[in-house]
Image (cartoon, rainbow, N blue to C red; front, top):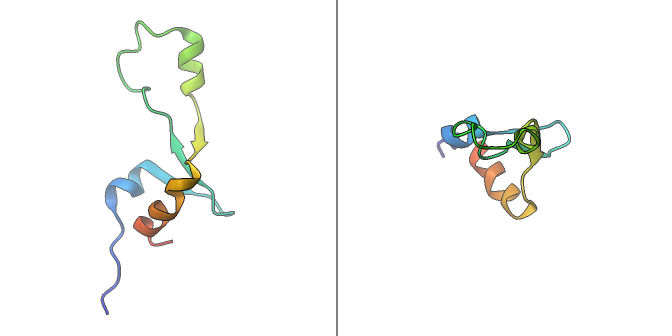
Amino acid sequence: MPKQKTHSGTKDRVRVTKNGKVLRRRAGTSHLLQHKSASRKRRYAGVEPVVKAQVKSIKRKLGV
């Protein structure tokens, strides 16, 4: 049986912590920032956990 390949797109977008949480960047941070308020842009900073319903499929794509 061949090994399962890692999904490259998912690998670039999320990471799994030691405790098994899946973290992602927030959407809307890369362009059209000129008209967005400073407080809105600050909320985009950092990472947030992935919705619980998607964790199983993401981990399968990563081979975790």
